[in-house]
Length: 233
Image 1 (cartoon, helix red, strand yellow):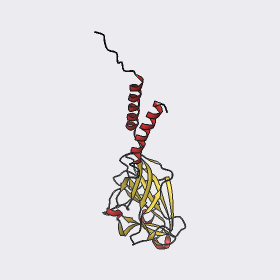
Image 2: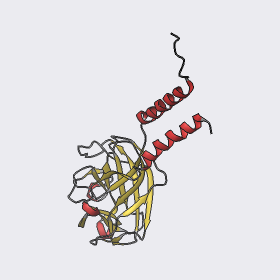
Image 3: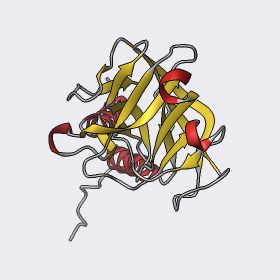
Image 4: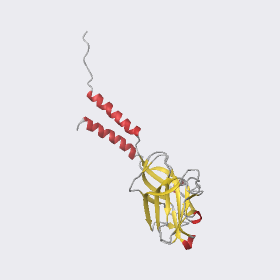
């Protein structure tokens, strides 16, 4: 195996082993210790006019990564009150305010980055149910300092009435509701549903440059001969 190939493989292994060691990094979480959340309180998610007086009522929680990640998973607690045990969870981009907006400067755009569907996965509301875990297959890039939204949506025609359990303690970060008293547009609300987002760090230009610099040094040391001649006296 040639020197160049060996050096490339060595540096690649170092770079990617460093990234792998950070796989599944928590990008955002408002869960309490031991993944706890408010069992008895939650935001309405409904597609049952008789149960919640709304044909479609969805809830969303926003988060902003501090660095750039490739999405790994989204976890949230949602309990079923009645109707079919069906739920859509959507990752959406941010949009400028439409009706009312919190200090975070945006609301869900209804532009879906990735969609997940849960069937018969919700436990009864009011119980300490396991988190619903949506594992990404698209693995979209989450840009640093960019607001994204996780939306819980009862599937149309399902007659589902559920609740997204609140965070512990209650986090007053980005949250929004559509339907119900908010009408047909997203509006900002106080209090987030519990949420955890994980991802794999994306190497930045500095990391790639450092690898290239190290490779160049090694190649230079190998290629440039070091003179061992001594001046005659």
